[in-house]
Structures are given as C-alpha cells and as structure tokens.
Length: 331
Image (cartoon, rainbow, N blue to C red):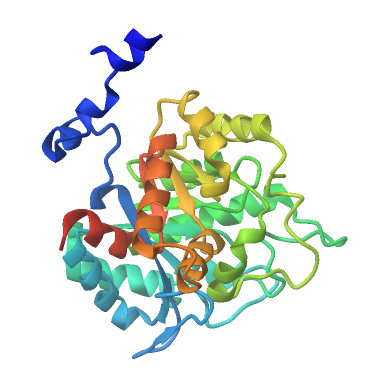
C-alpha cells in the first residue's frame, strides 16, 4: 500500500502541475461554436425592453434583433434560437404561421442582413400563440388534441422555413410531431432543413422565468399530460429514440442541469448530436446564488456548462452564451 501511494505509478498530479500540459490532456472542451443563444422577438418597432425575471434577456422587436446578434457575434456566438410573442392570440394559435408576426419578420430581416454568417433555429410550438396557453388545439374537455395539433405544428414549421429558418425545433411534446414536421418540410420543398427535437422535455418547476418572457403560461391546468414526469428516465429515452426513428436530426434534453443522468444515458443510446437547454429557472438559480454571495458567479456558470458537456451534450442552449463565450475565449 505504501509503495502504491508514495511510489511513482500513481502520481495523478503530474498531469496537473504544468498549465500547458493540463490544457493538452483536458477531456472536455467548451467553445462558442457549441452554444445557441435564445432570443425573444415581439411586435412593433424600436422595442428593446428587459425581461424583469430573466437576467440579461430582452424583448426585442424584429428591427432591433441585429443589436443582440452583433454583440453575440463579437463573442463568437453564431447560432440563435428564436421565440416569438404574437400581436394577437386565439384558441387555435393561428398567428403562429402568419407572415406578419415577429418570428417570420425577424427571420427575414436577419437573413437579409447576415445570410449564412449566422444560424437561425425557431421554436415550433403553439403555447405563445393560443389564448389558453396550451401547446396545441383543445378538445371540448380541455385536453390537448394530439393529432390535429401535429398538423398545425407542421404548418408553423413550414412558415418558418419559408421565412428563412435554418433549423426548426418542435417543443410541444406531441406524439408524432417530428414525423409531421418532416412531412410538411419535405412536401414544401425543404427536405434539407434539419429538425432539432425537444425529445425529452420534462414537466418542470424551472420554466417560470421563460413563461414570463414568452407570455406562455397556461391559463388553466398544467402540461403534465404531454410533458414528461421527472421520475421517468426510461420513458425519456423512449421518447428521444422514437423521435430519432421519425427523422429528428438532433435530440434534446430539457431541463439539463437537473437531468444530467438523462443526458448521459441518452448519449450512450444514440449517435445523433445531442442538445440540452439550460432553462430559465436553472440559469436564474445560478444568478441568484451569485447575487447572494453564495457562489462565484463566473466560475459557477462555467462549471455548470462544463457539466453539460461532460454529460454528453454537443450543443448547449443557454441564456449565458455570450458571457460564457467571452470567458472561454478571453474576448
């Protein structure tokens, strides 16, 4: 025993002593190219107002989205996820595919300005657009009607593709939604457009600030009948692998910090690229801890994002994308 501890074979610190060597043997990297920054676009012109519950996040009208994009590009972030708040809502969410709404306007403006310099993904759901706040069409008893909803999701995705989206991301957790989007895109002439599925999306207490930002809280009930229970890791894998069979190009786990076991298990179960979403409540939990003096904020953010990479995520959707990118690049 003494020989093993004090001898020459198990000196683990040898690889840590010199910073250059420590960098050479680093097992996990964290780079701007791996991160996606969410953006919230709203009706009107000249609008840029902070979201009070979500640090550093603004509501931005389509004509000013380039301001947020320019700041991100300076830090090395080139990929963005667009959420839209509509100018009108109804029971069927019909504004979700309307050409005059903020997402479609924002896509056209950003593509005209930047072309292929940036990559634009759109969230495909109905909760921001329905007056009841649920993620699809409702039956008379108030339950979400799955099969008609997935057809509407395909229609939304096609409207985003026509406006300039580079990728679409269905988040409604409807059965068959990936297949429905794939059919709509293929039939609409967008067979090369990838689908990043929110494939393992849990019913979580950590979405609160996002729902403020997106105006998407349900007006009655909750989403437990279609979002997943946090108890079920096997079901989470089934959900993601079924989406892979339906044609998803990228799978996603949401939330992420509290679901590192799902990330790790899914990484072992698929060869597809794997994304994760460090959601608003997880992000603000770190922010509040830092503000209270309980956490070194920058180090905590960095460590949290490294944990996601270590668990197997290839792509990180994060509100801290710009800040973390600046930390790892020194820009």
